[in-house]
Length: 168
Image (cartoon, rainbow, N blue to C red; front, top):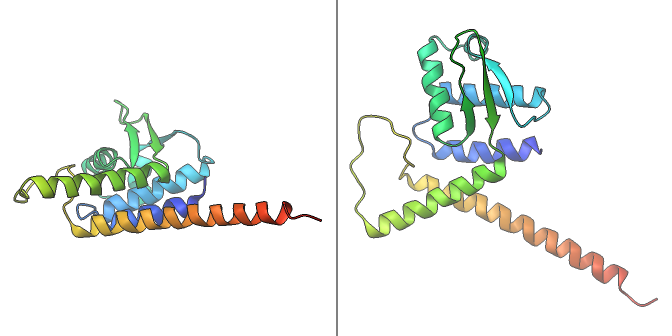
């Protein structure tokens, strides 16, 4: 797991997520830190009270709401426990999947905007993708980075082939 790429990708995505609050950001960063401490295990356990204290969240209901929203946005997979003293299971979605989600969201927005009128914003938060133009910019930026990476890999492979296939 390349945690720098993961965090950079996530920071690009968070720029476009207008629904995200400082609590969402604090929770995600702390979850990422714990994931790192667990050596990027596929899933790990968390305790609600411990997370509330670590993230300086004032209310258990705010914590629960934000965790559900992080799950709905596709950034984590959250399986809450029924007991307030139990351990909930969390999985962090890898950055490659975050990029794919962002690109598909941007593509869906373009298709939706081309065929239908944009609905009026509601006063209640939803897990629907934002129609913010910055979403498309971030998705385009991530796609551009991915293409540049592939081009660089192709160029280095071609260079190595030419270097070792030259006659002596």
